[in-house]
Image 1 (cartoon, rainbow, N blue to C red):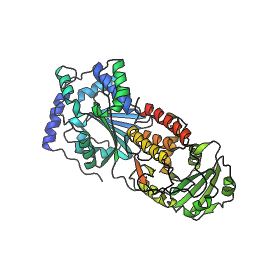
Image 2: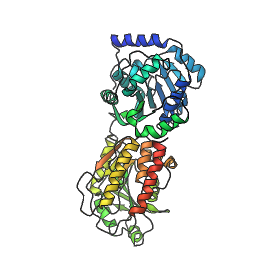
Image 3: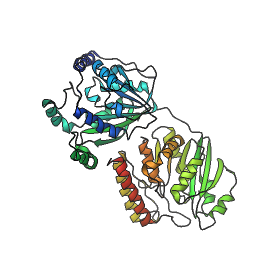
Length: 475
């Protein structure tokens, strides 16, 4: 139950001062339009076409009109700006109101945008807490604030008439916003800097914003943050699907059946084989239809590679949660409940195994592979804006409903990942899912040889990272 919202006398006085300022005729111009276009370009990587979008502090709707979304509503304190916005953008649903007391009579939104609003809020915690009323468990709160390093430049811009003066700026830092979100039961799980050249100066602006800003986020004008509800209720899964890709793993299949624990109300074990040179398929085909904790599904993949096997098996899965278990059992099956618990408790939306925390068996990973895994972890943490320590651990888990959305947009990052790990991580990030690392103890395989071709596959994965960087960072 949400707490009652009260506005203090001091906050009311501040809102009245803002109201007097916003009663002035709105100022439109090339600079504000250019800045709105830059913000929209970044926000549209975080919003999907099917989302219901609310922008609080929408002004005349310049940003909201540029955003993706199935329905788009705006709320602003200024009657003059709302009137102007209704003329400029008649398709938008614009309302007059205060962020501190906004209420949409039970209507909820998939995405709530707060663009350069928190610096002018009378009580930021109050605003954030009030927005809980128009959110649901999957709502994403998208925020951008000005970098405090830009304060002298923005002040100079106002003195020169390049920007209108807005009273009582809070000048919040990134950490201030994270803390205020936490107080209001929002969890910030992703952040990054963008826009290093807000002025429309042709090629120079485009070059700086595309190629320099992603590598100098500390110097960017805008800091973006993505948050989700911090106290979503527990969600118990019914069936949990465990996908086991198996190529030349005939000697380990029997152990899979005895070591996979019960997950959810029932475990669906999907064993998919492809292109084996031993008798792996014959061993799988001879398995019974059920095992101790549920049913067994036996598939032969139509394509090649583990990535393709995972895609085909996930599409055939019927569980509420889908997870991967490598048939070599280097990730102990007994650790699978940890992945399910992270999703059920709503601590994260995507569980990613990490082999680089606990000591591993002596021959579990060669030194060159260890270095590559650590390097990819650093690259991904920068690319995604949230920490990912180990990108190539074979075991990952997510809700099947999220996977279906990911699968529908797979072409965004291409379809050339040989293992499926990068494909899932990039896709999860594009859906604004919170990723959480699950440390496991990595074991030496006890049967057969690895299917990884270190150098050839390493080159392919590096190519995929560069491709994704252009999609996620250098856009």
